[in-house]
Length: 478
Image 1 (cartoon, one colour):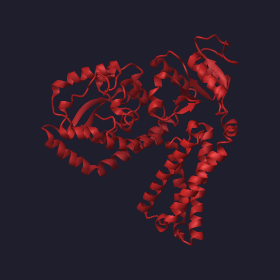
Image 2 (cartoon, rainbow, N blue to C red):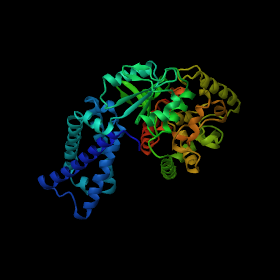
Image 3 (spheres, rainbow, N blue to C red):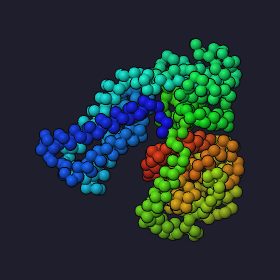
């Protein structure tokens, strides 16, 4: 995975401190309180669990943004995120222990108490009192990134100013690339334009650039996406600060350089490896999910059948990966009336054209009079989406990914919109857990493209877990 090197350092320290906290808590419980909590034949299982859950805590830290620079350099948000991570981690550990009858926790609650105190105190002290004061030292040795800024306009100069005078990150500005500024012309202080954007590859190689930050004013989406592709071909860290992607830091916690949000758009995992993981996980999880949720399927089937005449399942042709069409399944939530399909298409095209949200915009796609009473509940909780597990099992969809669109929508897409179809569509995704219907069409595309450029197994798990409260509380659903 391509992450800044300092993040690996913090993760290694976190893992070591948490593992030692487990071991010290076990030692105190057994030797000070004279509670022999480890049975000899289970000693290997005990230390294996310590190792696995130390890794789980690292993942929880990642989920709570504890490896982002703007959190690392604070105190109150830092401690709050650590406390939240430890509470969740201990709850997971307790549930796991009861499931497998793990003797260590079941024999002594003191172990949990000591681990909470020792672990939280240990990690907090190491991070805030040790690593933070010496952060600049670590960045000089391990980070010290050479940054190339693409864009010598107002945004690029502001970023350079912030990095120059508030450089907490150990980075070094190499210079700028811009088509509107002559090569060698001074852009800001001693930093000059190193050439045109077409000179990107040669400039990166010549100046040993580690990180590329795109900060261009007055650029369109299509040109921006093509530039991002060119940058990612160089296998360097690629970040973006642009008003075109403002929805990302609004909906997702991103890193910031001296208060300027930057969106990471460089792939983290090998494409082939990630594809293998996603397909394996999709097949296994959808199969298990269908079995576990079979009683729910049965109840909804009966309710839909009793609510109104018609089929139980709603079938529709959607567009999937690489523009391939497939049959999409949902529980039927509306009264049957084919005459309104044309009206809905017109409303949808107007919605896409105006780029307003479904709630606040003038384009009202859904005719609420057609929704059945049970359908209203199913749509609010997204339970009508459950049959898509069969689409996942068939290989048409993934659990996580951009939503599949209708053929007429796909035909009306701009070229940069169609980029969301280079991966399998998903049952849930970034924009679904970020407001669903309260997100505009263009913003939903941007969030999907952010996901595609940041796909990792851990991000998929995060989005799956975040989907449950969205379903429970029906945020942004219609």
